[in-house]
Length: 279
Image 1 (cartoon, rainbow, N blue to C red):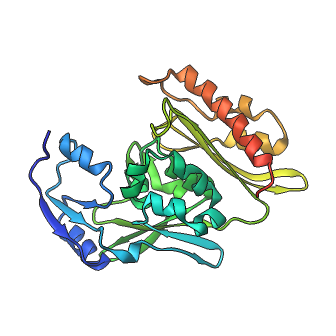
Image 2 (image 1 turned 120 degrees about the vertical axis):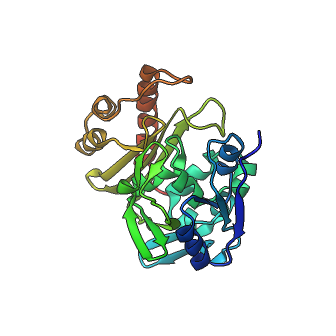
Image 3 (image 1 turned 60 degrees about the horizontal axis):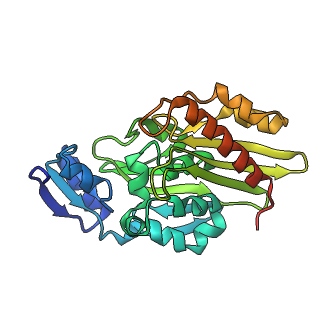
């Protein structure tokens, strides 16, 4: 299929991109395009204007400022995969990146695009939720920051409004006591996960503390398993507590019962990762 007719503009700066978004209510940003192009071709999306932001080098940074790692929205997955800064300061993201699609997709797909698209089976939204990340959003009137907890609002829905552009994400840098775990189950490596889990915690002499378990592929958004988190900290059966946290719907790939079972399997695997000292 072919997309519906649309206009095209190449933005030369963030300010110009934001001005174009402000002027054209029915506009979409083109970054990696790995999801957008497919929806255009299937006519699931038919914007009047595409704004190409691929030349905006100001959105391709990876930097540490104080206790925070900031990743620009146009950082490619492949660039993030190779980044020593991400491996050192955000190990959870480093663990998740190889699971995202395939190398050809990661060469073009962007961190900001994956997060803004908000696919419920995607890895990075769950990682941001587990890390307690912040998302920077800009528009023609200024910039604001939204916590990951508040950013993902529904199926493919986020806190982004008309005229908004996701410009960066910020995560707390890893500490010596930080522990991370990641696992997913997919029909084939590179497919969207049937069920996945991103986890972060702090380890002290009493065990795991500040546990954050973010499941994906089980609901319209990433889900914090708060009952299981509390069970882990109390030394109780966290897998049993998942019954209070997850109520997945079945789909063509797995029934609801299968997803619940797989969530428990992943939880046990990830808790074993959290118990290991960081390298």
